[in-house]
Length: 71
Image 1 (cartoon, helix red, strand yellow):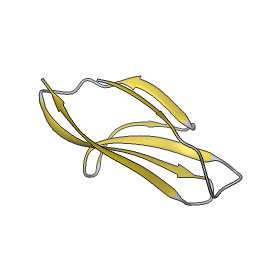
Image 2 (cartoon, helix red, strand yellow):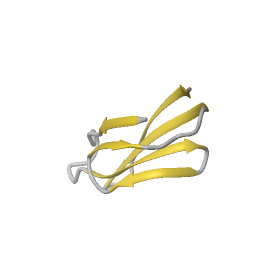
Image 3 (cartoon, one colour):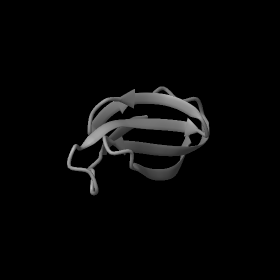
């Protein structure tokens, strides 16, 4: 599965610290210490409640949830 994400710190001039992909609650599948990611993850067939989470250097957290189905 191909994942592409970009994050912008709306309340922090110091910018984004990292972005993480969760494939289930508490399951860290991928982390990048940057404001964008472009990666492929190998996922078994099934339904996933994906959360792309970014945090900035001021402590703010940004999340984008998405449910996907892999066949």
